[in-house]
Each structure stands twice: as C-alpha cells, then as structure tokens.
Length: 133
Image 1 (cartoon, one colour):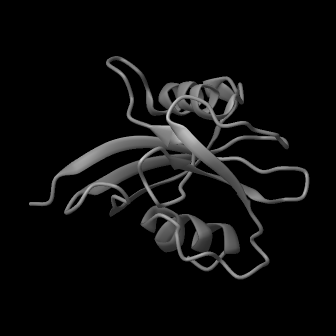
Image 2 (cartoon, one colour):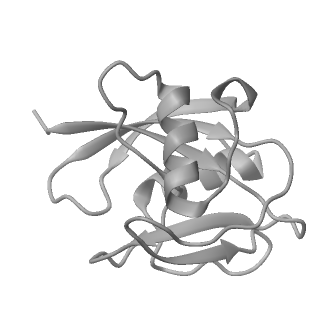
Image 3 (spheres, rainbow, N blue to C red):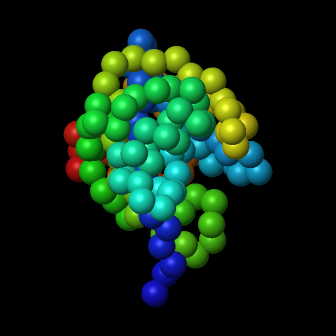
C-alpha cells in the first residue's frame, strides 16, 4: 500500500481572479498553501493556520468553504499519496511568502498552465474549478 500523508489546503484568489500557488523551499512544484494538521486540529483549523503561516492571510476556519477531499500523488515525496481536504477562502487577497515558502505565483486560469504544478492541482482542483469533473 502506498504511504499517505493527510493535508489541508486552501484555494485563494486575487482581485483579478488568479489562483494563489506556492513553492516550498527545496522543492520545484507549485501547490496550494496548506499542510499537515497538528495534533487535535480539524482540517479547517489546519488550513486556516497554514494559510496565515505561509502567506500571511488570516481567514477563520469557520469562514473557509469546503471544496472537496481528494487523493493525489504527493508532489515532493516519492511513492507517496496525499489525502487533501481542500477549501476556498471567500473574498480576494494579496499574499507574501513566509515560513517555508520560497516563492508565490498567481495562476491565471485562462492562460496556458505551467508544467511545474503539483498533481493535486492538475488532476483534481483545476478540473473542479473549470467545472469539468
């Protein structure tokens, strides 16, 4: 059986409708802000905490909207899956990289997509956002 990591992630948009993606230090794939829940945290609490720690966006857990739960290949761990609970943050935001985030990039969903996106994004989230699931 493939090892599995449980994570929470958040889709955040700017005023131009672009999706926020982040690249963690020492990695080459862009993904959502998010990470592993700490002991006793709900998925929404972990998503809210990680969003603040990684990109400086404060959204209370109860304001996040559940988008779905997916299993995908982990972007940065070989032969490992992630089980991702993904939320959307209401409103429009600006962000700055913090903690382990080396770089942020706003993804124009109407343009050609870059090749350095995490499997969760390409296989599940973008099809859901495009309404093609």
